[in-house]
Image 1 (tube, rainbow, N blue to C red):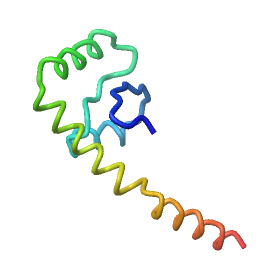
Image 2 (image 1 turned 180 degrees about the horizontal axis):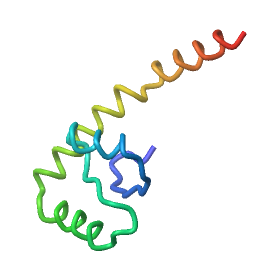
Image 3 (image 1 turned 30 degrees about the horizontal axis):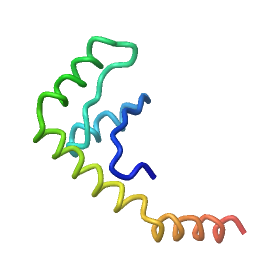
Length: 83
C-alpha cells in the first residue's frame, strides 16, 4: 500500500467518472485530453481544502470497500458459490 503517497492513476470508465464526481473522490477528465489533465492537476495543486476533502473521502471509500475482512468474505462467497 502507498501509505501517505500521492499518485495519479489513469483509466477510463463512465461509472468511475460519475462516482469520482458524485462522491467527491477526485477529478475526472476526458481521455487523451492533456489540457484537461493539466487543468485538473493545477486545480488540485492550488486548492489545499479540495485535496484534503478528496483525500479523506477516497480513504474512507477504500477502507470501507477494500478492507481485508470484506475482500476475504467476498472471496469465500465466490469460492462457495462455484462449488
